[in-house]
Amino acid sequence: MMYRPKIKIQWVPLDWVVELTSGILIIMLFVIPLINYLELPATIPTHFNMKGEVDGYGHKSTIWVLPMIGVIMYIGFVILNKYPHIFNYPLEITEENAKRQYTLATRLIRQINLFTVSLFVYLETTIISAVKSGGGSGFSMISIPIILIGSLIPIVVYLYQVNKTQSST
Image 1 (cartoon, rainbow, N blue to C red):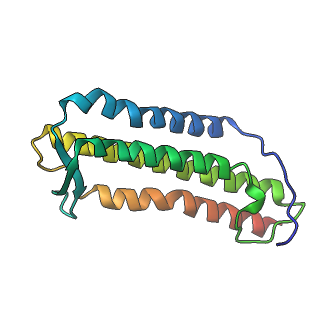
Image 2 (image 1 turned 30 degrees about the vertical axis):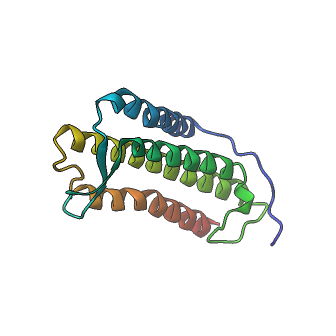
């Protein structure tokens, strides 16, 4: 592997807002099922088909799977973001461009982390809503394109910014 400088990236207010929002959502991942756990029936929805209909069920304790996976992923992204010099980049990292490229890449990871935690909160509330509505619809069809587009936006913005930075040098 080529040498890459190790630089501490300074956060701007947007970075703090994204990180704080992710942290609040992580807390919500545990508070939402905690508040609703006693009201949940013994069997809850665990899977939805492409029509948004429940097609899989499990014990109500499975409601804790999403928070556990969510917190593991959140911590993984936070740790990963401390080492931007090990990321893969679409261009060569030099002493001159390292700070800018690391800043863009860590911001991307932070935004992906926020999106992932948001998605987990959405899925959790969808499961609980399906239970409260008697096991009917839960996952909306409109959710699929929103999730796909939402997951691609930070990546497209990042690639645009990298390309813009590369073109101006």
